[in-house]
Image 1 (cartoon, rainbow, N blue to C red):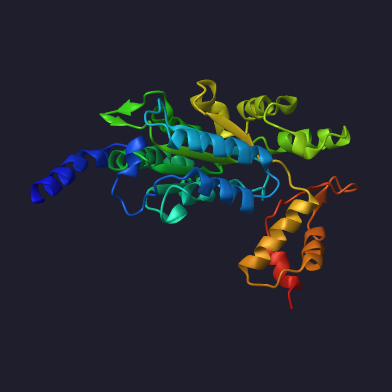
Image 2: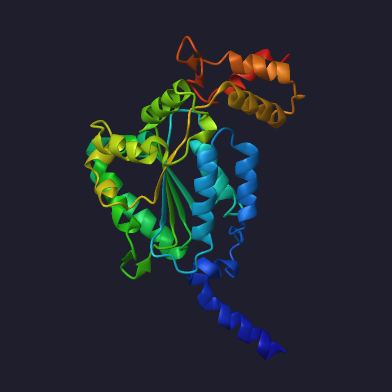
Length: 311
């Protein structure tokens, strides 16, 4: 009995350095055995008005997490205007992979203007970022890296990430094929809003828009590739096609903002009140100014608006 127990423990030791299928056996109190139903439920219940995101993220993440031998890291790029749910979805993904979710020490969040504010220090940032990514993945292959304000990031820093994203990426004996990279960006947001608005004017239901509708993904790609103010423009990540999915977050309509207000009521332990939610939602800015079809701020600052109305 004792020798058998010892054999099992000894056999499982090498597994700790593997990923993919072996995550199920990995003994780390901060890692979940991935369950796509949890991801599906969270996306369905707490993400409002983003049917494209729901579809692509669920399929992409589930496929990657259940692949025992991926040929490259998962690289997702989220695009849309403010308040449409980009950060929220990144947190949902982390929640369903790590016990501590976004607070996990395996999840590394970088905000461009906070972590890399000074161009004159780009060489130092490059060295630090490269070392942090390498160290994290070498100790834990299923590490996650989230880059917020990616469009504001210095091109030199974006190119530091590039070698870790490539097919069969192996740097100094460390494989990066099981890592996850998520880029959050406002780049392409105006293009997405224009497509949504044009579709509305043509009588096309918003829910009928998909990745291939009006070449939506292609338009995002072209926009961020040609934007002179974007760090993407001068980076080789785009032209070498290392991003797996450019995922559009559509602008939200009144009914979606109303859902956000109702969710905030539950979060703040306020008794659900549809009339109050409608009032708060209608007080948000919408565009075009005359038709007021889409929320200019998405659900951003909904909580701050709500507390002004709650007595």
